[in-house]
Length: 225
Image (tube, rainbow, N blue to C red):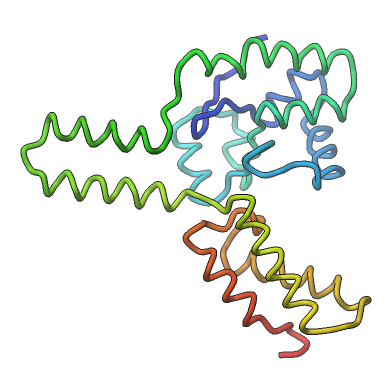
């Protein structure tokens, strides 16, 4: 089985179409399994959802078929995500394909040491020192790299829990009505996603976490406002 190699942010991934082809099924089946078991899939662990500028940059650097060129959200599946899909399909073909992917696709990246963000920064600094006589220019370059890295870092598990606790505290503060709380949870999470332009609260940038907590603490439901 030959397929286009896709590496994204230091890890090897597959598109939904590639995964479906490998498992001998259809993209709609992969999508349906994902929707039915969405609570089991963790963004950045099992899959990466690209949209907006991130998706445009990704498309620009690669060649895809016409269907993917016009998609507004592109799902990229990690090795752990591929395992969940194989488990959902639970066919001999899917399990055989999964073993092949682990041996011949996902693990190939381990043959080359991937640099961490810190190592990339240090390498950039060393290279600049070797080729630049202007130390101030080097400092500006390092600052720009740091800012670029910070712009891409999303909430870790502990920070996600802080958002969840802030949401729970706000909902319980607003009402003691158990029947009303689920609606408020949905409305608040929806407003958070709209406010920070993300597909899930987990995708909020780390630099915006305190802003998100402040937004939650000041939030007022539409019916009350």
